[in-house]
Image (tube, rainbow, N blue to C red; front, top):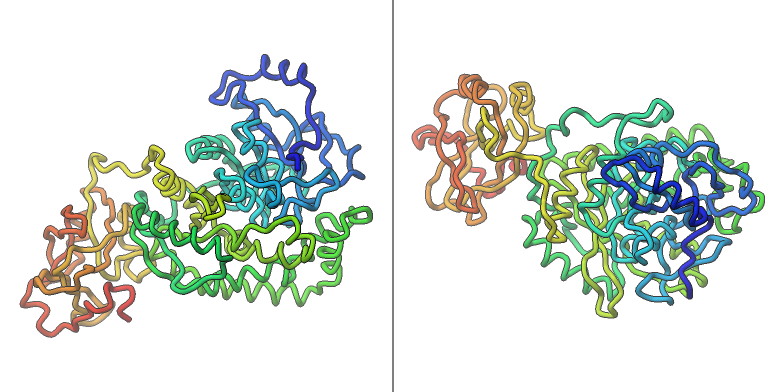
Length: 536
């Protein structure tokens, strides 16, 4: 099977003219591809629907213009699952393509053409979109990097909507470094996009500058046998990249079912229902029920989603990223033909919830399955943790990490906290108010014990090195604090606590609050919990 990458292209002379006239920016002369639901001036935006071939864009989408302003040159528009409704890459009247690794296996969608353009070496960068996983699934099936930024961080002005409140413009690249460069060029609030939002001046307080802690499922997950073998190898690699922490993922997976099993079908109907007359029958069958969704059902769905957000939010206070397989398996064309809706739905098991829960993600290659097909995983994080995820992804692939944290930053000091000053806990606001920023999550060396000290108000921790504490140590957070603020923090910490040096599990030492041994006599030993966060 040939790779049906392109729907329309500029002729070579036009491409050469654009390259000559391109600004002298960081991407000067670099070719890129654009998914055909994103406007490029002078080319039709069909969303893989031939009835829209006369819809020639008079102005490029904001994302396209930002790359052009950096010197990049668009070659043309790429194939896709029609109206960005699908994760298989087969729902296009312009033809379907297999993975670059196997003609018998699907390429993944809906951004199939953009992923293939990069994987096949035709361009180093391509734009796609991701509502349910379309910027990650085809990346996994073709062994490349797929970055899905925080919702609204990259403008969707000039994108034919699939599900307007969830749509994201994404990138496909061969390296994490190229994804980082593209993201930095694409981000920025856009007055032409009502869903656009600017990144905060600094990441949210619970996003660490140096991500180290990776959440992984705390139980078995749904995977095909070949995928299961590759996932085990990926977990072994992950343990060399960071510290693994088991976390429950049931609420994430339950939230994922809302995308097609809840009222968000109404938003798809609102976005392109009027264009479905000549649509692919499967796409039409999926979206048409959206016209019958009631207002009451919409608000019921929003209530359920709010519950899932509330249930999953505490997980982000204890980990830097959640690691999951990008998909449960890699179907063949025969699999899709036999059960087109069911196979597609299963592909979104680990991707559908990300935009619903306002998270960001990056899909990266993770070796191969026993049958030599590529296997991919994704790092998922809270909103605006994009650069922290890229740091982890670069460490995963062995690329140079552009670290946000500066260990030697003048005028600051690192301070470890083990109690209510940790992320998401009652006294964390005091730290943030003093200008502190979370540097990294860690554990003490073995031999420390943690006590809950008696007294009124917010419970206080007492950390003591007794020599017989848990072998795995005690969980803590290391915060970067302006030196003038250290005294203010110390003034608010009563006896028997005082500053001392804490040895971490990697052998390094950091300043932190320790209790005097006489002060813990009436305390409650909570060391078995492994940390303050899980003790109550």
